[in-house]
Length: 70
Image 1 (cartoon, helix red, strand yellow):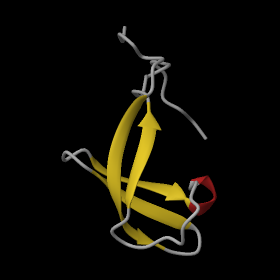
Image 2 (tube, one colour):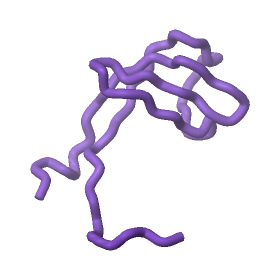
Image 3 (cartoon, one colour):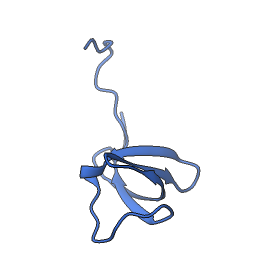
């Protein structure tokens, strides 16, 4: 059971690389790196390596004890 599992939290990161289809973001505070499809990025500016971004996330929750089969 997770407390506040339905509340999103704001995280910040820095763009480390991008190409025609994806953007890699290094999360601040040693939280790791995430890669997003370019179509999910909301911006009014051309993307540049080093730009600061904010990400609203909630905690991942395991929803089943079963192993997922594709």
